Length: 497
Image (tube, rainbow, N blue to C red; front, side, top):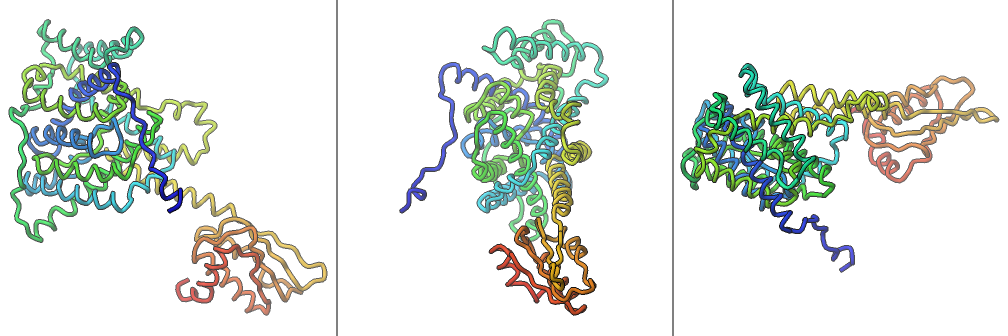
């Protein structure tokens, strides 16, 4: 066995659990739990189900992914994108079909994780990632607008006071997360003064009992599978897209690496568990993840505690949680929105230096995400736009120069660049097929590389056109991969091309 075969796989660096680290993880988990409650209730309403479905999902997902996931400190719970996908299913077929779809989506995610879908993240360009981050910041802010628009000056004042605490307190001390202090202070002020402002309790009824294992009450038939499979497939893809993009974002912020394959599989197993405990399909929750990371959390403990605290808060301390003003949580989320935005990417100096294509891809990604409220769709469109612009640019990187043999009769064409479907047509247009006094041409490809059948077909077409005019064409200088491709396909593509 070789040394390479026995080399151990690199492990993720884990911060030591000192007293200060433990305090940071515990407090970060508490802040996240408080922020999860109104979001989970809101997403339950979007999905058209009882608030308990979203709250139980957030609990089981966070606790499960803390053990099963591949990205420490990342928060997974009920999300808006997943709620939008399952809303028609819940409306037309009921909660049990929703739970069955959640379990099947988890199975799909496990299979995709085993198939290596996480490796596709390497094809997401930086400009798309920047657009993803900026769109995320915009969506987080827009999601808060309904909670304060038209609510009057007391709500505006509370939000302003909360933001002031969050931004100023870290300059004085970092012993306690500023968002947690803001929530406690604003809750104390509203309770003591009797201010009539929207509270968490106004969002919906909180559960009074623990979630218990159950089996969805659906018939185990092909008809059921045909109903839930399309929803499950969409849930699996959307969930993995958002989760893997969030993991990559946390990697960049914390300057650590995560196991993307394990994260993909972990999302699947966690959704299976969630479905059996009466929760809706979930994935990484980007806003709450940013709260966790910005609060200093770096381990799985904060993720586990976020779920555990959530259940304790809504079941055992529901009456206390219900009086928290929504303005306090809105202030926290606005802070997250501001902190998430990549302000450098939209600075005038950066825009002047950046190639217009990368700026365009970023803008397209942001526009699609904001228009659809779906991060996965925006990323897909951004990647497609980036691919199209890349192909357009590469197509113009190939070129042809030629020289005539001093003794006459032979023209040598020197081809450079990458030859594939986008550049092959331009290649054949560079040859002169009717040049007088030339009875032989040499096409030198020593500075070029053929990538696909289109390049081979273009060369075959050029050779045929030369032959029709009585000119013999010779292909030389092929590198080994190009030569093998040419040998396998040359002469066999005319019918297809």
